[in-house]
Length: 180
Image 1 (spheres, rainbow, N blue to C red):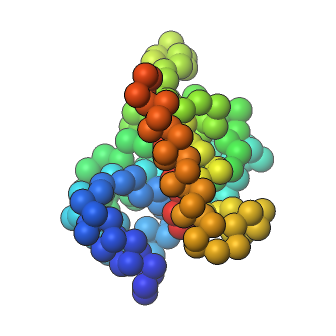
Image 2 (spheres, rainbow, N blue to C red):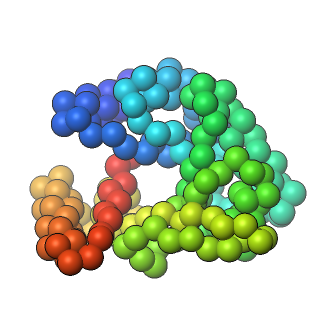
């Protein structure tokens, strides 16, 4: 909170890039100025759970409460309804249905199977899924030690971009890059 957000935000602003800022509700409650700054700079705020925890083990009522609480807190701080959700790691079998039942979410990014957004039917309603990628995610430093240096990560992300840009000449493509 003292340095990282400001470095990332200033860099994105210098490059005129808007992004989605996935945020845990409790963290936002403790440091609301970070969310306020992201909104002021034109970034989208997305829910990333109440705390940075897996949902796979949660009981349905507990998960429903965490989803509602996260949405309420982030929407209040952002000054507008937050419409996206990304569960840390594994969602539960109920997560997507609970998001749709809540009614405040347009999409989730709890899918790692595709390069492009797609719609699914959940409880008789269409719901947008925006795929997420773990390979172009800086968590690879922590969880797999795949990247030892910033240069290795940067080279990999640039190679992924170049590959998808080439494919994009004949079909749309999307690249997510996770920065923490």
